Every structure is written in C-alpha cells, then in structure tokens.
Length: 206
Ligand SMILES: Nc1ncnc2c1ncn2[C@@H]1O[C@H](COP(=O)(O)OP(=O)(O)OP(=O)(O)O)[C@@H](O)[C@H]1O
Ligand SMILES: O=C(O)c1ccc[n+]([C@@H]2O[C@H](COP(=O)([O-])O)[C@@H](O)[C@H]2O)c1
Image (cartoon, rainbow, N blue to C red):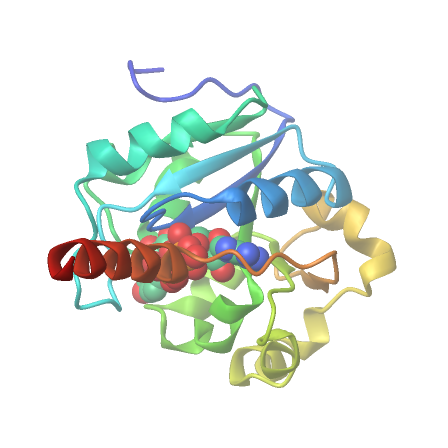
C-alpha cells in the first residue's frame, strides 16, 4: 500500500465515517465507538473530506482539521485519514468505489448520522453507494424521525435490517442498511463554530 494509505487485511470490517470534521468533536468519537461495537467493525476510518459537494461554505484547511481530529483520539482502532484528498475525490460514490478496488476483500460499511440520511437522496448516484456498501445510520438528536421517513429510507425500505441484526451488517451483501438508536450526542461542528464566533465578537466589542 502506498504511503499515507492505512493498512487493512482482507476479511477486516471497516466503517467509513465521512465528514467535514470542521472541527472534529466528541460526537464523532462517540458514534465511531458505538458503530464499532454494534456493527462489529475492526476499525473505523474517518474520511476527512476536502469539501462537502453540497456545502457552499469551504471548511478550514484540511491539515488543520486532520490535526485537530488526531488530537481527539485515544483509540487506535479509529483512524483519521486524508484518503479523499490523496485520491483527489469528493463524491462518496467515487471514494467508495476506489477504496473497494484498492482494498480487495475488505468489508467496508458506510457510516452516517441520521441527519445525513435525511438528505442522502441528494448525493450524487446515492443508489449506487447503497448497492456497493452496507450502510449504518446512527441516530442524531432532532433527525431520527425525519430520517426514518426520508425519501432515501422509503426507497431503501426493502433492504432495511432490524436493529437486532446490526451485528451482521458488515457481512451482508448490499444493499443493506440499519438505523440504530444510541445514547444520543448533541455535539455538532456548527455549534462549536458558532460558539467560537461569539467569543471573537465579544472580545472585539470588549
Ligand atoms: N453528534 C452526532 N451524532 C450522530 N452523528 C454525528 C454526530 N456528529 C456528527 N455526526 C455524523 O458524523 C459525520 C460527519 O459529521 P460532520 O463532520 O459533518 O460534523 P457535524 O457536526 O455534522 O458538522 P456540521 O455541523 O458542520 O454539519 C456525519 O455523518 C454526521 O451525521
Ligand atoms: O457524494 C455526494 O454527493 C455527497 C454529498 C454530501 C455529503 N457527502 C459526504 O457526506 C459526508 C458528510 O459530510 P458533512 O459535510 O456533512 O460532514 C462527507 O463524507 C461528504 O463527502 C457526499
């Protein structure tokens, strides 16, 4: 494997948590740990995105987001990566196809918070993503119900697993997906950025 590409052996189950991580927070760590346990994953890779294709506002520089993310983590099974930048890819469908080709025999699972399932049907070729990898959705405050009734969830209904089957997700032939409940975390990057901005404005006024 080329330098900068994490090592994974055939047969391993790896969760992919894509995100802007602008900045990373405890919510990311929390859902990664739960996903690892409930979906029986060997590792979770954070794919720190060069930029979300649906967001007009550019994030902080990639190197800074990676640095902050690495500082947060103590668990060696959660790995921060800049794979999308290395692959020069932003669309999840391209990233997933590339990783499957680069890591034959590795079982990838796409992970996302329920807020992302609500708008999953706006992602480029989203149904191809669902055909390539099982998807594990983690409940996030305020979006659990909307996710359950989202257009993507309705279309993918025939392939939905009951939460009791979450432990088999990584071994399933896609399409297969599950939405799990968990002790929810209200952490969000938007809230952290807003709090920082507030502080800057207060200091400016003081
Ligand atoms: N507290 C949380 N609970 C569940 N899922 C989460 C949580 N925080 C982030 N996620 C999920 O992690 C992935 C990456 O999240 P992202 O980096 O966009 O953080 P964010 O807090 O959602 O940022 P922003 O507020 O800027 O949208 C997404 O799939 C998101 O749904
Ligand atoms: O491929 C797409 O069309 C697409 C559209 C929106 C979001 N995504 C991916 O979804 C993940 C979560 O994005 P974000 O910005 O909400 O953290 C991240 O990996 C993005 O690249 C992907």
